[in-house]
Image 1 (cartoon, rainbow, N blue to C red):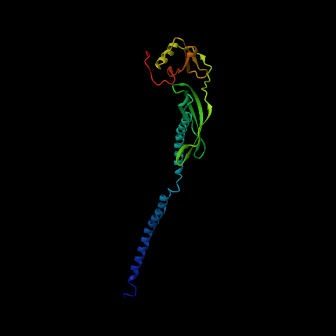
Image 2 (spheres, rainbow, N blue to C red):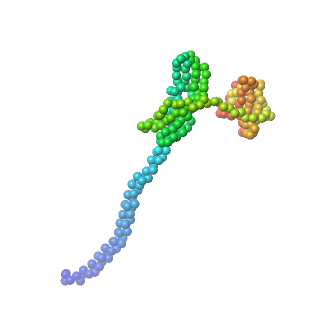
Image 3 (cartoon, rainbow, N blue to C red):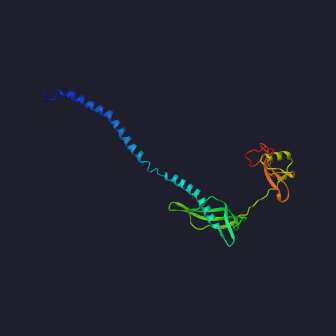
Length: 235
């Protein structure tokens, strides 16, 4: 009879097995999908904790600030040394800033080497090498001076000579190397060798107050140091 369930037994059993089989097949994929969703969400939010990316930005900003601090300091020194009055005049001829010395966040002291011209309203009569200190810092997003510069030293042009030794070399070859560098060699010429650097020579040109020194190297060829091109020998 339809209601006694005898005809539904096999059908119900088969349906149960199908449901169980579907569950075995589908559930693992559901688990994988859930895990992918769970694992995928942090991938989008993980950028936020990883935000120590601000550190390279800060480093870049500090590097940029260091680059700006020098020109700011030079400009302030120029303003400090430029003056006219009482028949005298001073002006900045050239200047170079040392790397900034950090005193803390957004605060530096910058030393500036300045060549200062001295004269009157008609012409410049002398020049001096001066060293100035400038406090520089960041205020309201800009690198600015924090006070007027002050002079800390008169830079003496110091040359510590080396005890060069007489060199037995062909002076004609030295003259040729000098001419290639555009340096006229006079008759009064001698060559000296560096006591520690055997590949270095010094040409002593002339005598007395007009004497000049030119350094050369002997390898790979005899040439004037610092010379980047060549000049016809007849020049």
